[in-house]
Amino acid sequence: MQPLIRAVESKLAVLPVPVTLRLPGGRMIGPPRSKVTLGFSRWSSVAAFAAGKIGSIGEGFVENRVQIEGHMRDVFAVAVGLLPGSPVASNTSWWPALLRRARSLAAHSLERDAEQIQFHYDVSDDFYTLWLDPRRVYSCAYYREPDMTLAQAQEAKLDHICRKLKLNANDRFLDIGAGWGGLLMWAAEHYGVDATGITLSKNQQTYVQRLINERGLQNRVRIHLRDYREMDVSVQFDKIASIGMFEHVGHAYLGAYFSRIHQLLVPGGLVLNHGITAGGLDAGQLGSGMGDFIEKYIFPGGELLHVSHILRETAAAGLEMVDTENLRPHYARTLWAWSDALEANLDAALQVLGQTANASRAERVLRAYRLYLAGSAMSFEQAWVSLHQMLSAKPTTTGGFDMPKGAQSTYPFNREYMYPKD
Image 1: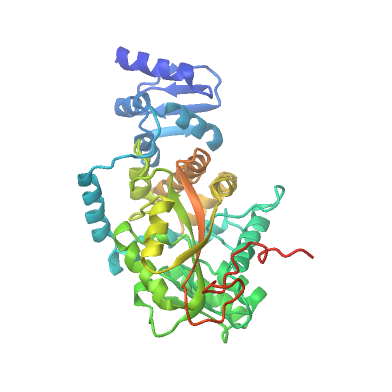
Image 2: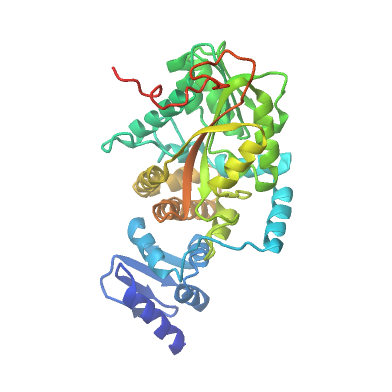
């Protein structure tokens, strides 16, 4: 074991944060008083540390083979220091691409997508309440002002989307993947739209329906438990939003997804896609085992693509991209806010999770989410993943959009309309 211990000691010497290790058998190495302490019950986990296999260490933590003590911000500063190189996958050969497509096809049937969404979102509504904002907006916030709270930044994001879409009273508005109804309610109550939302989460549908009833919006807002592929294309919408959705569609189905949006959108209408994109050009998950960890414990079936791939599929479906915005640093800040809130409520979170699962399962879920939130924040900070809002139009040549001439949609081809001067 001495060569392995020497390799570990070499790693410890160059890490950005002091780390103490507790080896199998109880021996301690590293500074005596460190910001981060890692305890290992197996030598295989020690070897994973020496090799920078972050995903393996994370799995060990979830399964209680690795103990982690310290603030999550410090823990993931250590994680960055452990990596042997960039975890952004880059493999352009045909065989891995073919395998990814085959897996994507298998992973995104109607039944599998419903199961995968419920795996993540139906853990416990009360669990998410502990660390999300009061509107339960589970996507990147928009810190329009640097001193905004998370709740303020989420409202700013909802309004930013509504402004981009040029929502007007009585617009027929569709929210694909409506979550807990934050955007649906904001659009209905602040912009007067006729709003329809769809979700695959039974918990979310029940929650949103309760909001609709409590606020007396039954005549203008509805929420359906429905897959986008099951939408009736004879019913069209003036504006469509899809927030945090296309990551779950799967590479193999993106063409069908954007084609269905094209069918559901009126000529001249606008659609805003807001979602996580890959930092690397090549389709694939994060390396060093991090992608495997997320697939196993958090988002089974999730697939990330570079923004250029998303825009290619958008164009292939007949939609014209008119505005794209990168909000990557905003998501890093959002995720750290979620992580800090969860870390401040660990006992309450364990109690809530224990109401729907046995003690062992509840502890595993909590440990997985602690790593997921902080690790995702780190990934956005490092630009391994990104977040884009892509506004597109369904062009029409029937006229009626002459500001500017040739617009072919309701988009004015400038950004001044979003925030007009007083």
